[in-house]
Image (cartoon, rainbow, N blue to C red; front, top):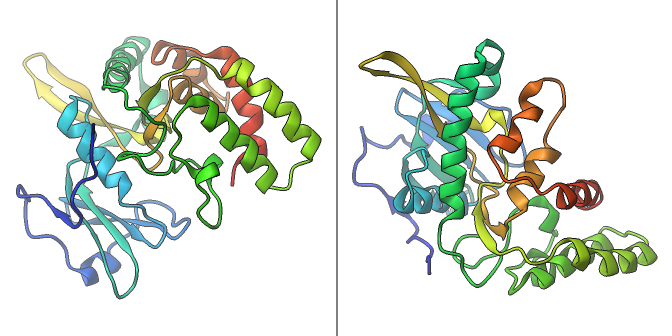
Length: 285
């Protein structure tokens, strides 16, 4: 069974000394600030995600995946908290390249097939990790997807959950927490076990979008070819097998052909996807 990493964590293969708090604070943002989080680039070696809204489990997810699979993730150099400010810090490898979202319009069909084949292998490798006896974040902790968010901790909604039945009930409890009509809650209690059943817990990235896939260039004997690195592991954890596909479909904008390629990366769960897309609109916080 996987166990949480010791925090603070400092890697022993640093490319150079870690940046100071001042260097991090004054570094340029490489993403919009959101939810008490900043993501900044410090020099050519480091990206730092920090703030009150950062959960260090994200860094542990990357350490776990890197240790146990060949899935390409950024190296994690440090995980720590500032007791004075309450900020959490994830110091990781800076990936030089462009997002798959930016690269997509210029790719040929053959290039798309090669990239998606690499992604399929990576997500299959995540699924092959030994399944634990719970649905939750790494180390048997609460799930971090917004569907399971409450302002104050509530294990009935946040998890971890001993079974898929308990996870289904958590979504109903979240519906009630959001002030949804009680008759709708009872209807969901009858329906969800008919749709969401028989799915084992598998390790899930939780946000398969092109913006979370970095395309880099590496040289081989045949010339240049694209390599991939998967970023943004903040929602990852042990979810039902259908979750990755359903969340990927929920994120689709249907404005280009990417929507038609998702089924080549992940096993489709069409019925579960229709239900979860509706639920996500009602439960997301």
